[in-house]
Length: 624
Image (tube, rainbow, N blue to C red; front, side, top):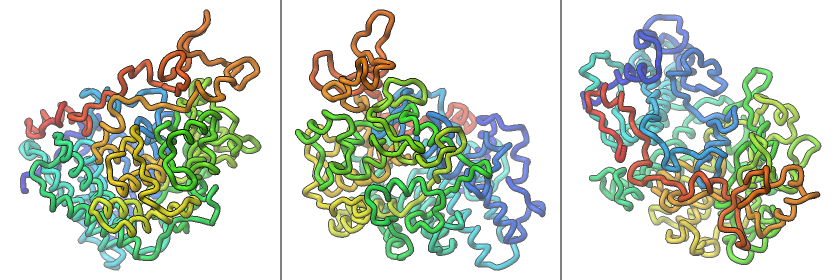
């Protein structure tokens, strides 16, 4: 264990990876303090901890350290194709951009191995732990910041675990002699257990609050995050072990996996029984779900545990609405996602009913026919798009750049349709970044209980508030069990299948899907050999719009062949003459579908430079 602790100098390696200036390790930990080598007051503890809220209102200025310091909480994207909550499902079976995602398609290269910026934050957090005792003042107030530090150390380690697997646990600031670098990575269970232990400390130290007005961490955020971590690891171990791939812990016992499920269940249950949070609803099922994501002030929203506020006047804003207000944003939601929403009366959307609805563009999105969350996630013709402008009858699949929809299913969630500035210019969007919400707590609880073969009634009770908000009938595991031959999770139990579908629908376009695919070891079912499709084109009324006088007359679409002087600008699956053909954006670039390698791609590679600087003690990830 002592050797495991002696790896803090990986921070020195990080300087090589991130091209930071020589001597960075000699600098004081980040932020401005009134004393040297000391955290002497409650105010200094607060100031010091603000640096870990990067991207939030507590620390908007991250220069000049952004190149070497990891961003903590997810925020909203600022550019087309950029990282951020609204776009982070891209490359999964939920959403695609024009550009192929290299990781999920199996095209990621060793040369693109990521830097490990989290160790910078870990070192600064360990400095906090070692100097916290110097602070004078009210112990209860001081302990809030100690709880924050415990949370953030867990957060950064979990980020590393998801991306590259187990690393080395560091819990104190150590000098940078070369010898202390040369130690192996810790076991995965040691990292997870240490993360969960830090979160237990955070739960004990952080304050209990009844709203998110402070936009700081509190007890229920720590519990929600603990449920996320424990559920991630339980399912990772269970499903990777079932696939017998290289990624599960070889000697892990069924009892250990069960203990992670139990911790996920119990952490979520603690939030649920606390009585402070609930699913946001005003009794308007056609509006409430969508409105949650464009409400600019969530301070007293009962569902939101932690969030980031944007304010144009403070030069704190993003650009999501500018891009999505074109109906394009150079992205599109997928047919697979759209198909997963139940009918309005709670049945799988399959067979003749599906085929008939798809003959008229967007009929399948209608809240009369389908779960109303669908029409609040995908742009439904006739809904407001900009002030005094509505979503047109057909999607802009014939456009270019950020005006284009890649699949014919434009993203509507997060669109501030009533904000003239947001839809017309960059950095004017103020739709909040919701970091933790109560819906996740309910879904984590439901999944953990389902995996433990717990009471189906308790699972349904956890899911039903989400259904009620959307105007959907209560959960009925038998009625909504999808056994269609093409459904990827048809072999799961009806309870686990329902929980997974509810999670996908509720969190569509919130950046949760990749983690779910990875922890369920589900690339074989959802990615490998597949191309994500869009809406039905041939066989629907869209073809009649691709003619003089039609919606696409200004820029006609050509598929299979093109007239002289033109080129093919639309790819469809199947072959010429087939009665039904769906938009197939990657037909040319991924002719055999995604090449995700299940023996390699569940983890990213480690930079060769890292392996060399640890004297070969850090082993490369499987398959790389």
